[in-house]
Image (cartoon, rainbow, N blue to C red):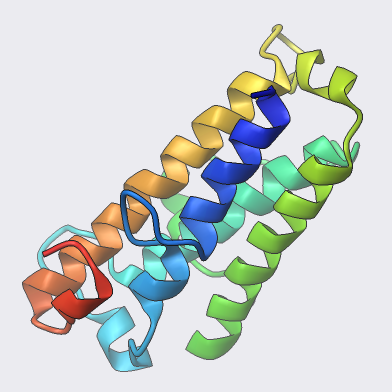
Length: 161
């Protein structure tokens, strides 16, 4: 199996195809804006996690497509805040949209792209960076499910008992 196929399968598992873990569409299904904004101690809310996923996926998708004009950030903490203050349903749509765009971009990319560096200051090939993006997304999807379990609004029929 080639790199592209593996990456696309990982992306689908993160986005909308149940596999070893719950995809983000299922993890967010039925969650109200109020529930998404609930916080416990210093932990991030689900809404903040979604903002973070949007930020990093959009940033790297832009780089993958050749746009290196990304906004400077002082701290990763900033990425958990929404810049455009859209409502909860729009935030979910934005996340699902960037994940769909990622899959399309990877599917349509020439195989040589995956060997090119994703960064200007060091050699970090795209196949490796994309693998890490997939791991990063899966990590935060797990957090979302765990927060929902802790807050008592997770239906175990959706997966992960």
